[in-house]
Amino acid sequence: MRVLLVSGASGIGRSIASAVVDRGGEVILAGRQRDSLDAAVSELGPGASAVTIDLGDELSITQAAAEIGPVDHIVSLAADHANGPITELDPGAIRKAFDAKVIGPILLAKHFSPQLREGGSFLFFSGVAAWRPAPGLSVMVTTNGAVAFLVEALAVELAPTRVNALSPGIVDSGAWDSMGSGKDTLFADTARTNPVRRVGQPSDIAAAALSLLTNTFVTGVTLHVDGGGRLA
Ligand SMILES: NC(=O)c1ccc[n+]([C@@H]2O[C@H](COP(=O)([O-])OP(=O)(O)OC[C@H]3O[C@@H](n4cnc5c(N)ncnc54)[C@H](OP(=O)(O)O)[C@@H]3O)[C@@H](O)[C@H]2O)c1
Picture 1 (cartoon, protein in one colour):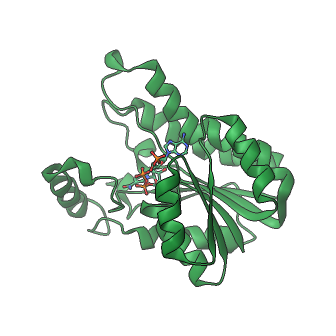
Picture 2 (spheres, helix red, strand yellow):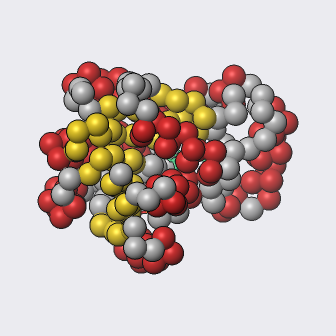
């Protein structure tokens, strides 16, 4: 299994990379920060390599497609946030959020679908916020929600290539570390209110991602791996 992982050097993507390498597969880590990609490649060992992709730059995607050659699966976990009151949002930040979650995945499908191996698939990342709207999260809700519709459309257009989405709940991926003590409050509230009574771990998401990549009868779905958080 040869897998391109956009945003695979850290967080949930890094956990998926380890899971693929552990089962004898090959990962190509893609992202904007070459240093962190190279560091993750040396940790993962001979099954890993790196390529530079900025989902806001179509040329970088075209060049990566030519450089990498055929792959089995494309996974994109990229996210860029534009949170805050709607009256204060910066259009540039909004566009970057759409580049990372919506336009970037469309461009990945455009440039990589012709070179996907038989039985291959795309996996894009949505998020529980889409099903839990709240003030200040309108862009996050919309971009994550768009992913769920995008995979249905692409599953039809790219058939028999499979196209799926995964929607994590609150996961201790490192993404929340900058919140300081706010992270503890968020995690305690999540564990108190969601049906499984805990936050997620990257390994929870990696296990579900591997299932979506390998189950050849699943396409056009958004799998909620959120501890039931969207229902709480
Ligand atoms: N962690 C959670 O609790 C949670 C909850 C719901 C949904 N999710 C979703 O799950 C996915 C993975 O989450 P995570 O917490 O592991 O990751 P994360 O910390 O949100 O990291 C996302 C990464 O996307 C990369 N990125 C942003 N714009 C990009 C672009 N234009 N081109 C290429 N890369 C770009 C950034 O890399 P650089 O800045 O280094 O380039 C960043 O490291 C995300 O899609 C996230 O929205 C996570």
